[in-house]
Amino acid sequence: MPITKQAKKRVRQAEQRRNHNRSRRSKMRTLIKKVYEISDKKEAEKALKEAVSYLDRMSVKGIIHENNAARKKAQLTKYVNNL
Image 1 (cartoon, one colour):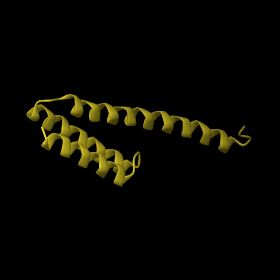
Image 2 (cartoon, rainbow, N blue to C red):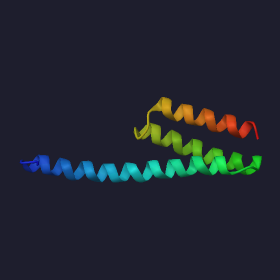
Image 3 (cartoon, rainbow, N blue to C red):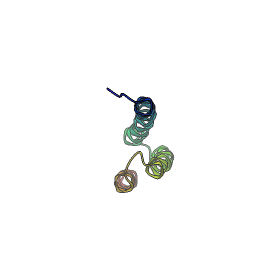
Image 4 (cartoon, rainbow, N blue to C red):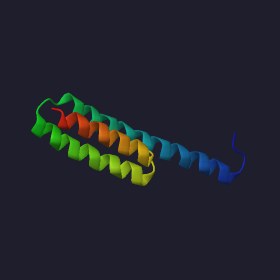
């Protein structure tokens, strides 16, 4: 248990950040799933553009690692190109 006032505040801030990042990661996963669910190439390209943009934002903000984002983008692009 935190004892000092500063430690208590850090616990509150960490919880807020955890919830904020969790919702962002959830949205990211949803966008990725949408790409895989679409079988029409034109629709998949639109969904891919949105997912890639969001992955880039998440990597810049540090929610996911840059290499993780790059790997996911490559996999999505490969999937859409093979449609």
